[in-house]
Image (cartoon, rainbow, N blue to C red; front, side, top):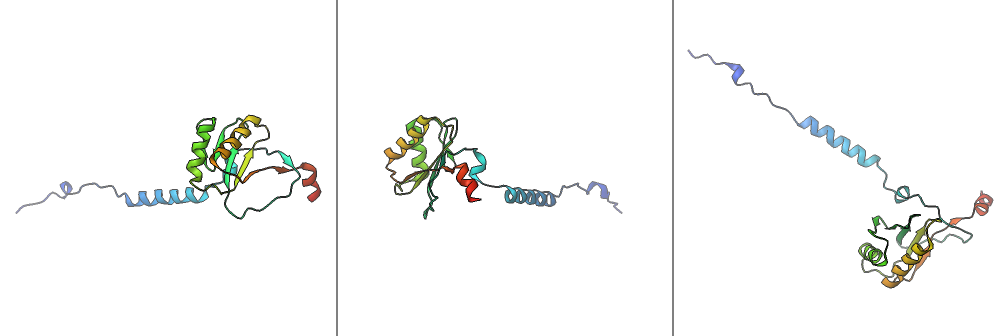
Length: 145
C-alpha cells in the first residue's frame, strides 16, 4: 500500500485578481476626481478693458503668453520663444484651418515683445480673426454687482 504525502502537492499560489480589482478602482477614482482645466495650470492676470464680452460660436484657438514670455497653444507649450518655434506649435495644433478665430491671452506683466511675436506668428500663418482677452475693469465689475 502506497501512502501519499499531501504536503508535497500543496503548492502556494498568489491570487492576483483582488489586487487588480483594487488597482482598477483606484485608477478610476483618480481619473474621475482629476480636473482638466487649462485655466488652473497658468495664473494669468489679464489687462483691464471696458469692452463688452462677445460670445464665440466656434471653438477658438487659444494662445496663452505667461508673465515670463512662454507660449502655450491650447494644451501644448512652445519649446522656445522664437517665432519659428511658435509657428510650428500653432500649425501642429490648428492644422489647416486658418479661418478659425484665435483668442490671444497675455498676462498683464508679459513683455510687449512676447505679444507682438505671438501676433506676428499668427499673421504669418494666415490667421486673421485675432481677439485679445481682457478682464473687466475693477470699477466696472464693482458697478455690475
